[in-house]
Length: 232
Image (cartoon, rainbow, N blue to C red; front, side):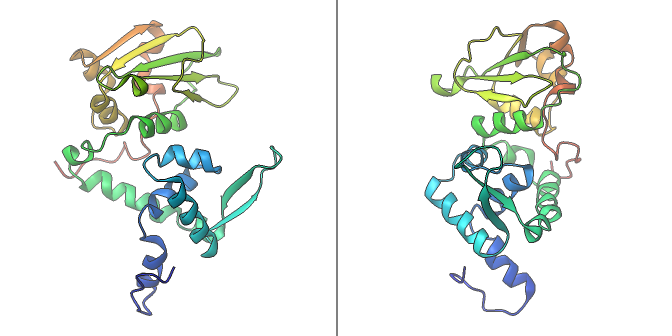
């Protein structure tokens, strides 16, 4: 990781040589959030090429931030785990997010919409506590997107993990959500509310009334949504 070296003994400069290469902080965000397998990491950084992802993981491993080991649950599957040094970066990456949420103007944040990343983050942060004790299937439709990106399903089982599908899983849907991607992203980021989106008819909820009424409480929001915007 000597390419582009600052050639300074300052610890800030030396840390920047490792952490400030393109995609590295975003990749660390995914590892800190709990993604361990290559395909999971790809879903969290969908615009990063597989070759670059592999390269960055090797660099982080060489720097002692990440280690590879065999999965304890599946034979032949490798997982990427943060080392003690990697876990120390948690508060640093969180501070990046807090600063970005507070200081980056809302209209700039909402210029970079990505439905795959949004749905992956919603899956990861969904709160199953207010959900029914049975399996619930939620369909999200983004009418303005191409057909291949328009429909997404969240399958919620309180006793298991939340699954995300971009192909119809074949289950009966409990709640249909029709919304534009910008509005859904703004809700996820804490810049908008479900109630306001429904009232303005930018979001249409059809199906289970209890699920619809409780959507704001079970919807997985960004970990930074609670931070108050200081930029306009």
